[in-house]
Amino acid sequence: MNITLKIWRQKNRDDKGKFVTYKLGDVSAEMTFLEMLDYLNEKLIREGADPVAFDSDCREGICGMCGLYINGRPNGPRKGVTTCQLSMSAFKDGDTITVEPWRAKAFPVIKDLVVDRTSFDKIIQAGGYISVNTGAAPEANAIPVKKENAERAFDAGICIGCGSCVAACTNASAMLFVSAKVSQLALLPQGRVEAKERVRAMVQAMDELGFGNCSNTGACEVECPKEISLSHIARLNREYFTAGIT
Amino acid sequence: MSNIFTSSVGKKFIMSLAGLFLIIFLVLHLSINITLILFKTPETFNKAATFMGNNPVIKIMEVVLFGGILLHMIYGAVLQIQNLLARPVRYKKSNYSQTSFFSKYMLHTAIIITIFLVIHLLDFWIKNKFLGEVHDITYADGKTYHDLGALVIERFQIGWVVIVYVVLLLGLGFHLHHSFQSAFQTLGLNHKTYTPVIKALGVIYSIVVAGGFISIPVVIYFLK
Image (tube, rainbow over all chains, first blue to last red; front, side, top):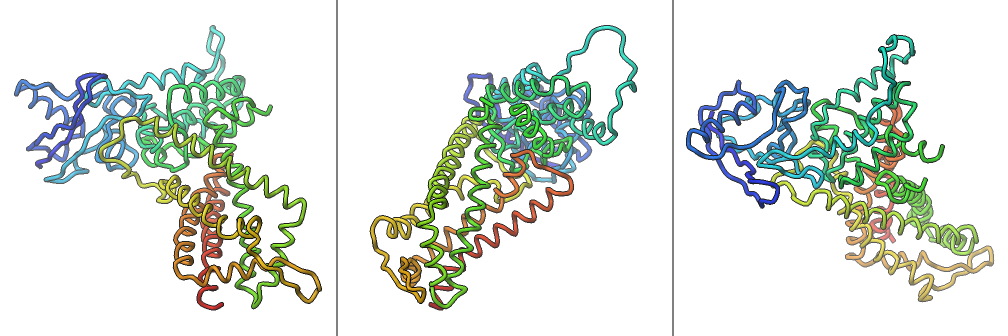
């Protein structure tokens, strides 16, 4: 199929940036979105032009590197997929596809479609961990965990930190990400030890990094490639208030 | 608890508590106003309004109410400004996510409600409380009441006033549609079984409250 791409091009952090239109023919419906961009880049390199910079690593929906804002939605039109898992069969011949980087103050553009997501690392560094003593790993089944909690913790734990929630949110809020990380640990006995300090520190880091505030629109939940639930945001709120009053 | 006034989650907590308080206030307000169209004469309404105007507890609550409105507005404005600053460069093509319609327009409906509030307070509250434009009426019990009902009925004889009220009250309904369940979510109350019930209650609440308030000027215009 033939497609028209409107891609955000920006030389570096300080460049103003602009949209550049590319016509691309012979695109197969069996290509992934990133393969289509590879194909475009091969063409650009052959022509001596600067290829489009975009992030990717595992290309199987696990690493969380590849997110792009495609036609007004993070990771394009399909539900529950990362950009690398998006197939070109989601588009049809003659389509115009607008590709933008994640837009948030906390995610500055480095080049073209690549953004700096160090903010997420800083939030994790603020409290998204459990302190353990070194030594031999203890027997895994020594601490009983309620099955329901183990499952909920797992549902939160599958967050890959891709930033789709921030990209989707009209307020560029990181609440779904932070709540997934808080929930994952708050639901397990090993995480309870530092639960209060964790939620306070992570919310504070999130605020200081310039993310917006959650207004419960639910766009993050809809666009999350791992379909993480808004109920984790409610749990973060609960954790935060109980940390404040107890 | 020091972060409750400064952190994002804390500010939203205050906003949702103030919002829930206003949600309860609206039920009380509607239950009194609806008597204007339920009964032939505004007697019940005038008696209730006079009681509300004189009862010391209600007088204190009036101050709390204005405080709640201000708190909700100020925190809403602060959060909104932070939200706008969180995305200095906007998307060229955005907002195609399949989310609830009304949640995207909370700022817009909030502005509509603020406009409504100014008009509404100028229309009735100021006239009744400060301008003395309300006449007294004596009922069968021998007591004298402010005939606020007459002022309301007189005001809603004017077609454009009714239209303005209906349009602006629709904005209130849209705001409430999202806010009811949103407040619970912000307070951390999300449950597999109860959240769908809360969401349904929110929709029913917004339709009943906005519909109820809208019916008052409309019924008065056509029938009184």
